[in-house]
Structure formats: structure tokens, C-alpha cells
Length: 244
Ligand code: GLU
Image (tube, rainbow, N blue to C red; front, side):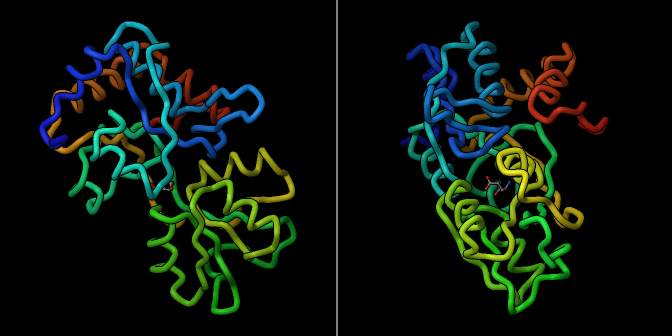
């Protein structure tokens, strides 16, 4: 039933955008347990979309997704869009449509400072890597370090807690997410070069071209106005590489 849903019409009818975002990912979508506020680059994108479609950036309802739950939640109509550190891949394009790239990340490793692991070449049958279910990080690491043991968690909070509890030797995901973990706990650091390309796109129900066009138009407007660069600097602390 949700296949041919006209998302823009539904958003206008209900008066708000329902965005699927992360609640456990510092810099992109993180819920502050005290204030209850959810903040990050992806959250600001959701607000910009509400402004674009409804003329009011506060008309947005956030719903928590994980890497594993985000596509089913979009497909069953519970959310209008996924804005959740999601890499555009050919496999995923069979299930959803994507906006243009709005952020370029790459997979890397996070280890405790002083760890003998210095990059992906250090991983072998004696090392355990922690990752999150449903992420590209899991498939990539199994391909690039086939001997390493991989332990999968429901979300990034759990995976990082497991790393701190010495349940593994390294945690692997996008450098952009690992950056947030390093800011959270300076006893951990990223090692080695990135070993994949992870271009983020916002995911939209398959076939909803009007929604894709609207999101891409918003992105272009944000780039033209300088708002995109401002957001990038606000969360990443640097200006975006010129390719973005
Ligand atoms: N960008 C990667 C992915 O889409 C890792 C981040 C995530 O799990 O959301 O799978």
C-alpha cells in the first residue's frame, strides 16, 4: 500500500515531516538523555526539509531508527524519509530511492589509545571487531578482513560500550561516526586510512520521484545559500571538502 504513497501530499496533510534519524550517533543524531533533545547534522537536515516543504523548521517529528530498522520503517510508511548516516549502495537502491549525496564518509577503525592495531592490516584471526547490524561496515569488514572475528550489536551506543568493556579489539564504522566517539571519550582514537567510500544519501520510498526531487532541490538551495557549509562546519568543525 505504501508503494505509491505520495509523501509530499501526506506531509502537507498532517502538517509535519516524520524523519527517521539516529538517536545514538554523536554529530549526526544524538539524544541528550537529560534534555531529551535530539541533535546533529542529520537532525538539522530534517529541520531544513520541514522548512522546505512546510515553511517551518519546527514542523518535524523525529523517530529513532537503527541501521537495521530504518529501511523497513520507511517501507511500511512509519517514516517519510531516512536521514541517518545511510550509505548509498547498489543493494539498497533495489529497496529505496536516494537523494543526491549530502555527506562523504569512509570506513575506519576505532581502538583504545596504545592498541597494537594500527589499521585494517593488523586484523587477523586473533582479533575481534565490533560493528552494528544492518550497516555496510559489517559487510565491508568481512570482505576486507575475512579472518577477523566480527561481533554485531543493535546500535552504536552498545558497540562503543562493548569496546570500552574490552569485548573487542576495535570498533569499525564510518570515520564521521568514530569522530563523535573520540569526542565522547578521548581514550579512543581512529587508526589507519579509510578503506571504503560511504556517500550518505537520504532514503525515500521507491518510486516517489517528487519527494526525491524536493530533497535534491533543498540540498542545492542549501549549497547555493551557504547554509550547507555552515551546517557542515557546525558539526564537523571544518569546511566541507570542495567535492561536496
Ligand atoms: N554509513 C554506513 C551504513 O549506512 C554505516 C553507518 C550506519 O550504520 O548507519 O551502513
